[in-house]
Amino acid sequence: RMNFINIRAFKHAILLVLGKYDNPEDEGEVTHFQALTAALSATVGLGNIAGVAVAISTGGPGAMFWMMLAGLLGMTSKFAECTLAQIYRRINPDGRVMGGPMCYLSTGLTQQFPGNAFLKGLGGFLSILFAVMCIGGSLAGGNAFQVKLSLGAVAETFPLLKENSWVYGLLMAVFVGIVIIGGIRSIARTTEKIVPFMCGIYVLAGMAIIILNIQKVPASFMAIIEGAFNPDALYGGIMGVLIIGFQRAAFSNEAGVGSAAIAHSAAKTEYPVREGIVASLGPFIDTIVICTMTALVIIITGSYNDPQYADLIASNEGAALTAEAMDSQIPYFKYVLSVSVILFAYSTMISWSYYGERCWAFLFGDSQKVSMAYRILFLVFVVLGSIVSATNVLDFGDLMILGMAFPNILGVLLLSNRVKQELDKYWSRYKTGEFDEQASN
Image (cartoon, rainbow, N blue to C red; front, side):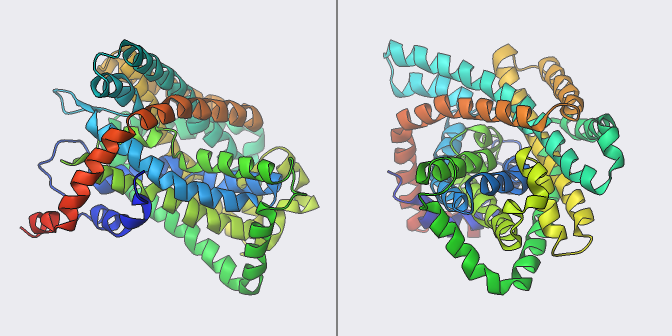
């Protein structure tokens, strides 16, 4: 319906992120680049390191094919939801933004279908359902799960933490608290520095391993393609691998979940479509670049079906499995990866704290006191994450994040007409060169 906006707007998206069309006078709290890094810091996390390892060890190399396809499709769903978040956002007198699925579900359906009492009631119900699920996803998948999985990887390098896991939880709580107390502006200032750095380290390491094993790359891609359509694959063949691939891709890039729309709603822009185009880069960077890098490392090293890692595979300790795979190729790299894992987990947690806090404020009132109460609750769950089971938290986090997708995708489908109208108006102006003239002036 959007005529492959994920492909035709790719160059424009990069120029937007580079700041070519930025106007500091536009309403909002953060720049295009800061909004993208805040959203990416929530998605480029342990889903990329741990989720890919879990997907491949469960469903074989073929699961990665479906993760890549989900990433391509996800670029457009991310565009649509983040455009809607900009259209229906609310800006408070103090400059703070309230935006995301809870706003376009409650306000958008009422405005788009005036006089339809059923859709008005449905919108109100869906917005509350989304907010509740997002709070659960924030405390579980975006918090406790990140602590537990990063602890699993770090404890392989520093065994002392295995017996004193609560120390790790307490330290993480302190460092998360320092940033999240300041809200989205503080979060954005942190993520714009952390995200490029941590992605750079990880991608360079992945590229080094791939180059060292360049002769194995064609066979690895063949294993991905053959495994995607292999009737003997685990969990019932093609459907099983497809489900595992899409499940882990959704957990990794969150396209269709609606979480990133909360971060992108805070961006400074006059044109909602513009932020949607910026947001579409998220799944590309997250899934097609970084997840593919992880997948190739896991497949090249053969760690996904190596008997010596059976315990890590059985307990879904994906981050630890990736650490072992990389360390087998680059000696002592597990120490560098431990730092990356902590940064990935940390950046994910600070962004998800904002998502949960905005939904909490939507339900209980958008005041500083209400927001602070949620931030304290979030920090309690950081410590709890260090002492609970990874599998239990992963299952609960998956359930909450899946729960967010149902009301969000339904709302995006019902409001897709509005997105299409806004896109057509914006794109015609862009093609005439109007925006380039504005930028040059």
